[in-house]
Each structure stands twice: as C-alpha cells, then as structure tokens.
Amino acid sequence: MTTSLSTFPPAVPGPSDTPSPVLRIPPATPAEAVAYFGASLAFHADVSDVAAALEAGGDPGFVVLDSRSTASWDQGHVPGAVHLPTALIAGQAERLLDQAVPVITYCWGPGCNGATRAALALAGLGYRVKEMLGGIEYWIREGFEVETRHGRERRAADPLTAPAGPADCGC
Image 1 (cartoon, rainbow, N blue to C red):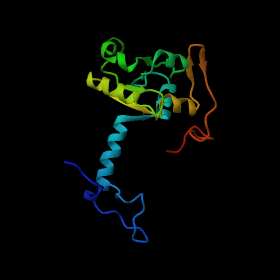
Image 2 (tube, rainbow, N blue to C red):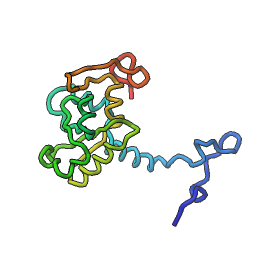
Image 3 (spheres, rainbow, N blue to C red):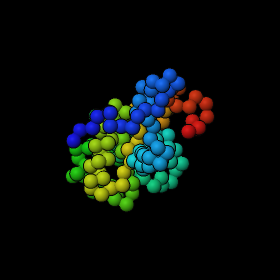
Image 4 (spheres, rainbow, N blue to C red):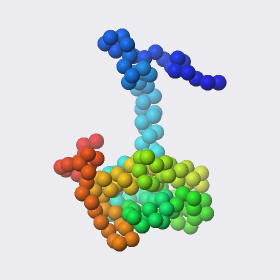
C-alpha cells in the first residue's frame, strides 16, 4: 500500500489561507513531539556534551568509537577514542568493547552515515549505543582537540558552529 500526501491531515492555514511550505504538513501533536524528541535524545549525543564529559576527567560512563578507516583515524580523531572501522565491528567489538559500557559512535560528519551504520552493527551485537551528531567534522569545527599520527592539535573554533564567547552555547 502506498501513502500519498493527500492522506496526511490538512495543513495549518496561514494568514492568506494558503499554507506555507513549512506548514503544508502540520506539526506533530505535543504528545507525538515529546515521544519523537525524547527518542532522538536516546539515540544521539551532541559533540559539545561528549567533549564536556571527556574533559571533566574521570570515567565519563561511555566509550567513544571512531568507525572510519585507519588513514582517516591518522588524520585526526577524538583523543581516547577506540578505533574500530564499521566493517570490522562484527569480528572485533567483543575484544575491544565492554557490553556494560555505552558506546558513542562517530564518523566524518553530517554528510556521512558511517556512525549510523556502526551504531546499528553494535546494537545488533547487544551494545547500548548513541551516535555523536556532527562527527569529527563538528568536533574539529567546535575547536576541540584532536589526536593525529603527529600528536595532538587544536584548531580555532568556527564562529558559525561554536559559541564565540563563553563555552556554553545556551542550548
């Protein structure tokens, strides 16, 4: 059975009684939004939150997993992350990861679904997992330190992606 847009509820009328492109499909009910956004937070972690937990010292309660290739890992990765390319998860996850510790996966960035595929593979093996939104791209763009084959480095934060003043963006 196929579903067409005509089966969705009518759009919320705008001031001219012609719905805007934004409201052609109306917003979810508040209860649906609570369920959706609550679930989203159960599946995703923010780059800034991961960095803050790691920088606080001690055990953050999770392990960070970089699912990219070795060449990509060598270019720069989250300090302390475990390197496990997605294709190797089935054969090596048990040796490298503790199933009692949640795993935060990342890959290149928003244009890449490698971290999603890694999270799926790990969940299929029984791990509790979240995907780090933005991947290494936003880790770097927000000015957090990376480890490369040459040592550690930190680039200036991109003012379009990170707070320009205090470390807290207010969200």
